Length: 138
Ligand code: CMP
Figure 1 (cartoon, rainbow, N blue to C red):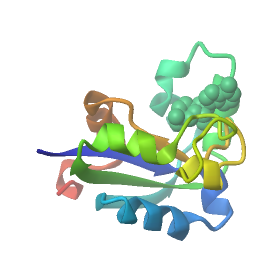
Figure 2 (cartoon, rainbow, N blue to C red; figure 1 turned 90 degrees about the vertical axis):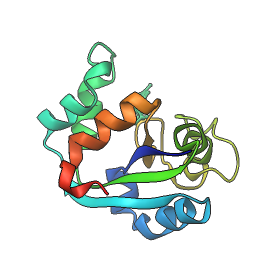
Figure 3 (cartoon, rainbow, N blue to C red; figure 1 turned 45 degrees about the horizontal axis):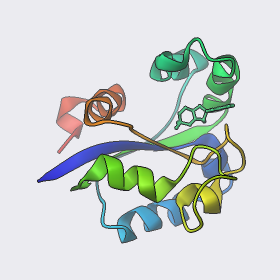
């Protein structure tokens, strides 16, 4: 069955002009974009989005970075969406990301790593709802 994941193109990739390159890779990998929004997060809202990382040493910096510029939030549909999308983006640390993955191509560092992908169906739903109202999700 088709299912969903959530993704966000991060400030480093938006600032570098890579929205087009990244969405092209996403579509060519067979994902259908069903909701899309370009916006900016305050550091407070970035902190809410990444609340699970609150105790990590990089949390403060992460909130600052994620609010440093525009982001593009998207809901994607595909069979096996969550796992296939994690494969497409590659490891968190771009120096460990497999060749040909979005992070291997576009990420600058372990923090400014170009793109986010939900890690479970449950988080895909929570994260999608963080950015999109029910009437925006078709
Ligand atoms: P993401 O997959 O969106 O989930 C948490 C984010 O925290 C991660 O991508 C990176 O942007 C950031 N992050 C993870 N590990 C580190 C780290 N060691 N140092 C700085 N930022 C990190």
